[in-house]
Image (cartoon, rainbow over all chains, first blue to last red; front, side, top):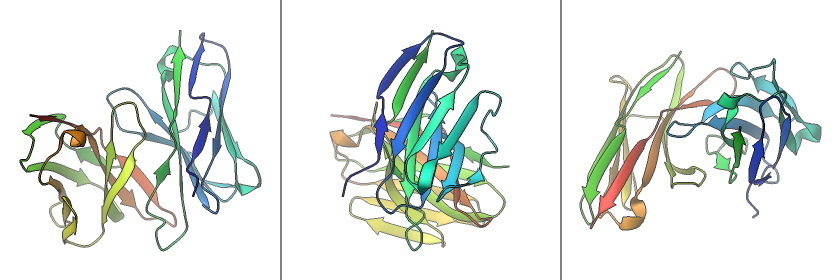
Length: 115
Length: 111
């Protein structure tokens, strides 16, 4: 089966610009996650969707970050305006519902550099 | 909130055994995960423990003690390709599966 797809793989922008990332999860996976991973740290959950509803966005900086999951499949994450501290790898992951809903499958990530 | 502690770095010799420890504090515990992440790549799932005890999967084993808030990942017969970061993560309940990751242990396997 095809894995989680993400694009772009790399992006360089200047601070105060906007950027958008796209994710296509594994077919049939109900749950989709966006993580931010800063170099040398573990992934930090930004937002979690179940189908097309948000179940957790407690760590999403809502003044600048937004995300949506249309029709319960693809998802986009947007940053507007970007700050220097947003430089990180943005990982998308998906998981099926039970019984193996605990296993997350990660995409290759988008490496964002804000200058 | 949740607190997850694991060593930052470890070095081990090819062919040897290495144990990576993880301690955690959390409310609503719903499982302990280990993921492997090679440099520049995405994490990949290794194991999931929800009950106390040892789970063995080939060269990798994972142990959990819920009462002690403690887990370890055991890697046997180390190979050079095992050089990677190993992420300990804790799941918590609440109607959906939310996972919080630790900062990871960077393992270097040397000849």
